[in-house]
Image (cartoon, rainbow, N blue to C red; front, side, top):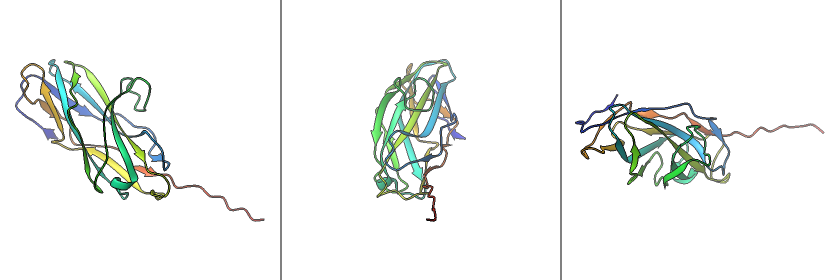
Length: 178
């Protein structure tokens, strides 16, 4: 699945490495929500220009997710770490909406693999309800990459990609008699 455009030198394959825990607490920053691995397969450098991310779930992204951040995951760990580079940030303006990371200018050398990590910053407990969930995805036409050789769009294979369902933790309560 995915989109195929006239190739001007370069081709990207998109895959999704595993991601950490599927639950998070209200008020948590930098929750890994979607990992994307871009591999250039045509031995021709390309530049990632933009990436559109959609979200679905029982929660309202416009109020429950304060911010989403796109990072270059330099160590490929799938967690926020010192070597990661922030490429952009955005907020959802509607429930089940989209955000666009535009003007990225991120080079991907020929035959190289580059990992990206999209994280979320969750609202506090007064806005989030236990059990609410969110799921980020990148659709077939949501990646724009250009050939560094001829400046034309390149083929992007392996889309759509949908991340794991991320849920707000349900607190454990213990009732003691006494």
